[in-house]
Image (cartoon, rainbow, N blue to C red; front, side, top):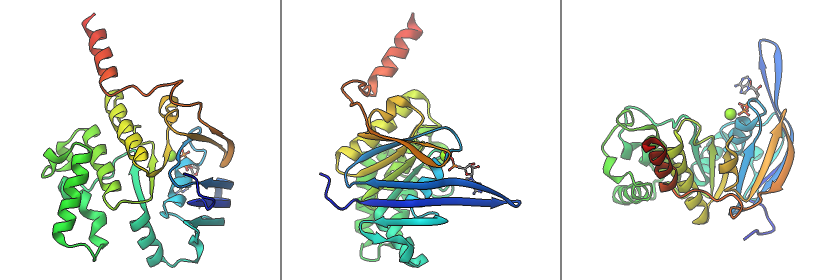
Length: 255
Ligand SMILES: Nc1ncnc2c1ncn2[C@@H]1O[C@H](COP(=O)(O)OP(=O)(O)O)[C@@H](O)[C@H]1O
Ligand SMILES: [Mg+2]
């Protein structure tokens, strides 16, 4: 699965923020390679630079220093328009807070990334949106607005939006952080399925159980990668099937 050319290659990435003459170094020399088809978990304490790293990987922000090559292409060399195009074609983002647009319906939210695809007809876009909503089991809510959905449903819609353009890289920043455990398990199962379908997945998570679903985990501390190791493997810490935690909780409630 791993070709010799990594999908992502970061070298000496630094990110500093200047606020009120105070400099915060969010990333302090990150070297990282991610291969196509990998599932990488990113862990570390609050403030260690996880979101800053994902924002750079997702071309939402630029590093203060260092180099980033995505699919062999040097990102620094691109102008804003080329970066936006690359982001739109190659990258799907899932955020902790879902970040759906409140005055658009579910289907219009999911269709948004396709609005830049001039080569797709309206009918093709509709068909693709329906397909990806079915994949996350939200087809029955296509005409609803985000506020009419539960958190778990909103995150499934956000995953559909991330997937609709068939990106090569999915970046998820604490995607289960705002969800109860049952919905978190469902969302995690969905992301694991997306990875099993061939996508490259890079996910920030605090939950060791979800990190265990990844093939590899890196740990950040003070803006540096302090550990980078293969995950022990799902056979040692199985992902529960979505039904199990609910059944277990119901049993506990009945006792
Ligand atoms: N836009 C910003 N302006 C100023 N400081 C920031 C900004 N974004 C992040 N930081 C700081 O950079 C550090 C890393 O933040 P972040 O990447 O969000 O960490 P994490 O996601 O691991 O909690 C923190 O000290 C944070 O306060
Ligand atoms: Mg964060």
